[in-house]
Length: 238
Ligand SMILES: Nc1nc2c(ncn2[C@@H]2O[C@H](COP(=O)(O)OP(=O)(O)OP(=O)(O)O)[C@@H](O)[C@H]2O)c(=O)[nH]1
Ligand SMILES: [Mg+2]
Image 1 (cartoon, rainbow, N blue to C red):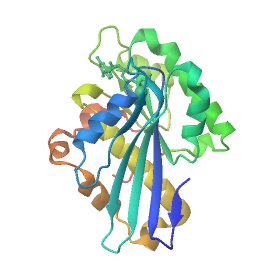
Image 2 (image 1 turned 90 degrees about the vertical axis):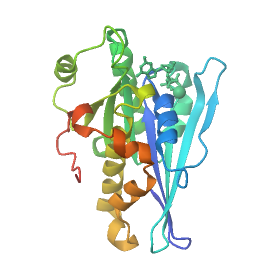
Image 3 (image 1 turned 30 degrees about the horizontal axis):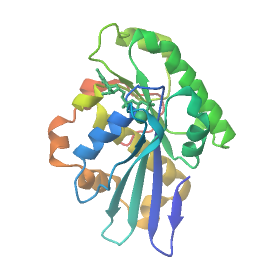
Image 4 (image 1 turned 180 degrees about the vertical axis):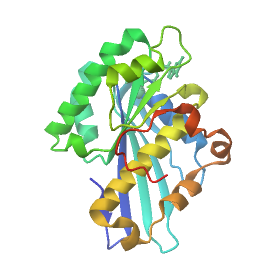
């Protein structure tokens, strides 16, 4: 749930990267950290075990100020995907405004993907968050590997969903910013529908996105190449 502090003219939005173990959630944040404008990004905080597995979470904070003086903070979190860390996943999901679900495209990971998606639904329910209303973007990562599910098969498995769905190769940055931008648009638009946020606070989402983009992003962004399905009724402002 968005935190609005009118006294300090501050808004904090939270987006969580969810998904099965080793699907590439931490990699998404590492790549985004490199892509974002240095003036707007904070330090990427990662709490890992020795073998690079997320033990608690990663956090990438972004800060931006509107010309009217409103401070906008965007906090990007990852959850630990390993099954045993469910208590941490529940805790990280608290108060989330939108979710990027990072799935692993390898055939061998199909069951892990669907179990993780079920786990997401259950943990949202436990947190008292309405799954049906939650803005969600799906990323099928690891498209560079062998034995991945073809796009047509993924579409057939998942059916027509409301979730915009992208393909990615996270370490190469392919599809990463596109997912980030889409989930951010959905999250902010969702908050705006509830709080009339843009008008009340003089906030412009396009200006925000333009400001936080580093130079590299404009060169590499390619929605049509990575977007597989735009989702139904996603209400994208594009
Ligand atoms: N080939 C390939 N490897 C990837 C891709 N994305 C991530 N990886 C690799 O997969 C491994 C796991 O990536 P992480 O980003 O740590 O995965 P995670 O989802 O954060 O994993 P947990 O923290 O355990 O939940 C790392 O070795 C990454 O370099 C991809 O698109 N292609
Ligand atoms: Mg991780």
